[in-house]
Image 1 (cartoon, rainbow, N blue to C red):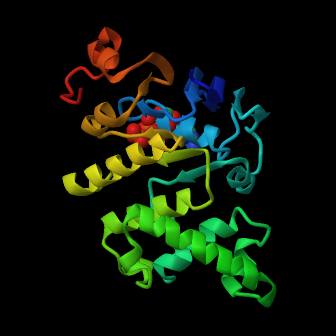
Image 2 (image 1 turned 45 degrees about the horizontal axis):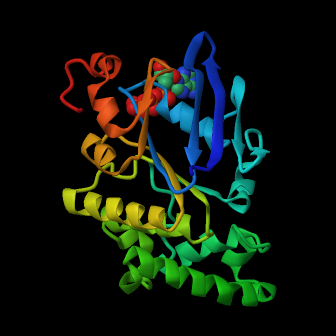
Length: 256
Ligand SMILES: Nc1ncnc2c1ncn2[C@@H]1O[C@H](COP(=O)(O)OP(=O)(O)OP(=O)(O)O)[C@@H](O)[C@H]1O
C-alpha cells in the first residue's frame, strides 16, 4: 500500500500580475520517484521553491509527515527529513569533498555548520560521527576515492554526485532535486539515475524537476506536468506520453 509522505495542496504563487503557479496539488508517496516537467517558464522552479520553503506561497500549503512545512525556516527542513539540491551547484569549492559532505551531516546535528566549519573543540565528537556518515555516503555514491580532493577541482559530473552525497548524508526521507541531470553526459546521467533507483528501493522518496525526458520516462514512477502555472496532467510515464494535453503543451518540441 502506498503511504503519502508529502501533500502539496493548492499551491499558488503570484508575482505582481503574473500567476506563476496556479492551484497545484499532488502527493509524494514513500519510496517513489516523482518528476515535475513542463515547458520553459511553466512554473516548475517557482513550485519547487515553494515546496522547499525558499518562497512563501501566495495561497496553498505543503504538508510533510503530518506537519505543515511551508513557512518553516529553510534550515529546519533537514531535521524534518527533507533535503534539496540546487540547479546551480552549492558546494564549498575550497573545501575537500569529505568536508563538504560532512557539512551535510552537521545540518542534521545540533552543532551548527559554522562552528563545525571553524572546527571548535566542542564539536570534536560530532565531527567524528559526521566523518563516519560522510564516508558511508561517499561510498554509496561512488566518489570515496576523491574524498581528499578540493571540491572545486572536481569535474562537473563529480560535483553533481558530491551534491547528492551531501543530500543523502543527513538520512532524509525525501530528497528534492532541481535538474539533477543538467549539464551531464549520458554516462553520468545514467549513473545518477541508477543511484536514485537504488536509494528508492531503500525507501527514500524523490521529487525532481528535469528537462531530460529520456531520464524522466525511465526513472519516474509518476509525473506531474505543469503548463502556464497549471497542473495539466499527472500519471505514469506511459500515461503522460499519450496524454493529448501534454502533447499539445510540448507542440513542436521533440521531447516526449
Ligand atoms: N521572482 C519573480 N518575479 C517575477 N516573475 C517571476 C519570478 N520568478 C519567476 N517568475 C515568472 O514566473 C513564471 C514561471 O517561472 P519558473 O522559473 O518557475 O518556470 P520554470 O518552469 O522553472 O522555467 P524553466 O524551465 O525555464 O526553468 C515565468 O513567467 C517567470 O517569468
